[in-house]
Amino acid sequence: MLIKRVVFQTEAVKLSSHLFCKLVLILLSGTFLQSCASYASHATSMRDGLLQGKPHLSLAIAEQKDPDQEEVISSLDKGMLRRINDDFSGSNQIFEVAKQEIEQLYGISITENLAALTINETLRGYQGDRYEQLLLHAFMAMNYIQLGQLDGARVEMLQANVKMMEWGDEPEEDAFLRYLEGIIYESLNELDSALISYRKAYTVYKEKGGYQYPAAPPGIKKDLLRLLAKQGLWSEYKSYKKEFNMIDGMVEHEPVKASKNMGELVVILNNGLAPIRTEAALPIYSTEVQQNLRVAFPVYRYPKRRLSTPRLFVNKKNYLMETVADVDALARYSLEQAMPGIMLRATARAVVKYNSQHSAQQSSDLAGLLMTITNLVTERADTRSWTTLPQEIQLKRILLPAGEHNVQIKMQNAAGQIIDVMGEQVTIYPGQSSFLIKHWAAPAAKKRQNE
Image (tube, rainbow, N blue to C red; front, side, top):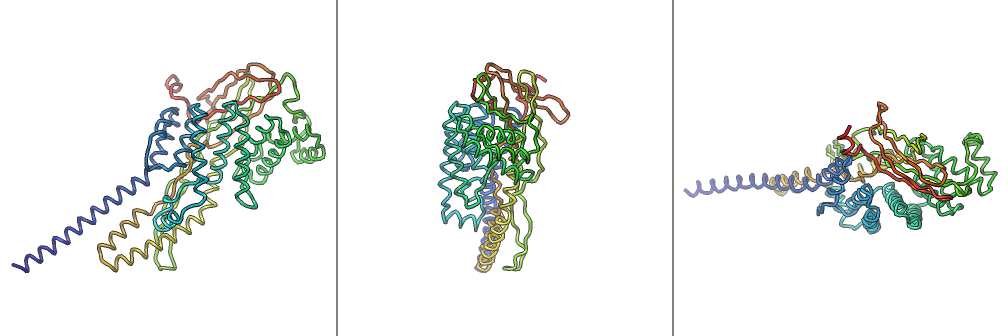
């Protein structure tokens, strides 16, 4: 009788252990995967609203409080969606939260680094890639411009410049940020500073165009020549003009403010949505443990999307907008540059997990099983990125007579059909710059229903 009872208790323990393992598997898988997936599902939901032409729904999703959302990525998305919904002041308030948090994260804690090494990189605070940090300043500057506060926009450019200088002897320059900086300085009549910015913008376009950035747009060439002429720097003017291979008729020699009855219209279109990262995994052989180890890493699984083409009309006259920033290319380039480090850390993390699993297995089968489950569930790629950024930024500067002007941006699909029209009356003031800044990802929902 005693033997039967012992056998029964042993079997009960085995059964309990089996059930316990299943329970742990369910809890670990459910809780951790839900946490890992929360960002991806949240980002997808926000983008769905924009792609359906319902930015207010995207904003409502972004404003929902979620303890799993990180301060930086959450604030970046809220800030962008607030500005898309024309709340420029509220946008800058939450952008400022992201900016301050990014500054604090420059000194990453030892605990976060250890967690990233042993569990996964999503446990490290998200600072944003460098191009995202610079675009944060650019969009805050655009908010200030639309609030009529050019001095605030100037401050953002100065802060971005300090950040670029902090990144080493060869600072990470951004062509669009430098171009926008020059436009802001010129609008404030700080022509020397504007000229410096245009030079830097052109240099970045020239050196990195076609890969990280679009080829140097005609606008930056004309702006550079125009200010060189204004400042009387004829030797440099002739050198650049020869390089650009332009004829005199293509170049505006006088700056906008030289005409008493003319002003400038600056149109900026944030077109489409930045690419979204997904996860991939593959086995990598480790010489340290002489085993194939599974590692997860972020990828851009889908190629660049074809954007609708903007056609700009001012008083029924058609103008060609120019691509001044390719955020899609910046995102892919940034991940490509980070990938060697990502894979190195992922492999090192896989070795740590393998060793912990091996040690647990020596302790008991149950401990080994639990560690195996934990390692499997926690091996996740860091797919975080600022997904509410535009895919491209397009710009056009036009010299116009002072007064009211009817401005329309007509979005044209691949078949040549006009699928959406954004219109606005813009007042041009003598010797000043007026700005029209829009976002577009899809036709507005109410317009699509009437088609």
